[in-house]
Image (cartoon, rainbow over all chains, first blue to last red; front, side, top):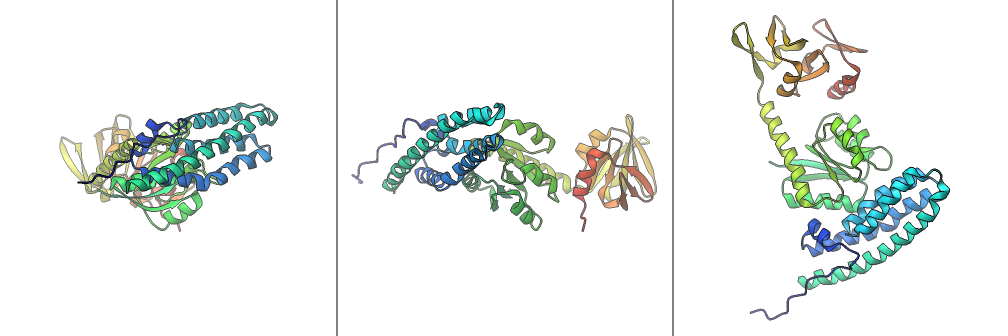
Length: 134
Length: 229
């Protein structure tokens, strides 16, 4: 008889939509860990598209970069961040000139860096949890 | 039934997710993952696959550019996060449209549509003839004998090497029923046998000396179907 205690159910950060994550990956924790890892590996490069468009004062480029980045946060269950990028994408599409986009952009970058910190922390916790299941 | 596919997606996490869904299904063999249109086209010009998982917005050319330039017609599942592409998706006859991220269940539904389409296609491809009602009897016409089919209002005329047959039908109805490997609509009044084309000049093609107009809407499609060196 195995007397080892079963690991407790993994509880995600409250910014992460747990139900949504489970709808994508069920309870495959090692795979969820991989997804978070891949996201982190490409995070800075993906973010750079936004930064480059901003530096070029390219509103359409910002719209495209936000569109491209949006699903990343769906895959990691950060649906609030995904929604924020969606709003930013729409905003860039209707902004009359670049100057009005700047304050929004700064908020978006701050939110994305915050999201990255959450993903990093969750990745570490997930890796430890997945290992405990083996 | 197992399908071969390629994934054309520049977002790494999305490409990995689609790849994993394919593996999990056991129904799709992934032959390549490409982050953009150019490397994908290079691969697809050398190898054929049954299915493309295709993103639309990628650096450089778009997914629709790939569909304009590919030499054959695999099934296509568009993977995008923009619903505005639904109209284009319809125009390009894609099998399904997956909004990222999508669940595995939704992935399977899309795959089902492709499998159903593929099995209908194989059923059609094994048939090499059709029967038409003409002069009070059913007449068998082998695909290889038909040069072209011409619309005549509520009737159509099948033109073969040595005979013409008029039957009550419409080109629209025929287009859905006959093999797309052999036949193609090139004008609102003509479906032609692709294997019988002698030459193409500007907006006309010739079959056994008979001139058949090609409409602007069909010109690109017909050129895609031909092997042009």
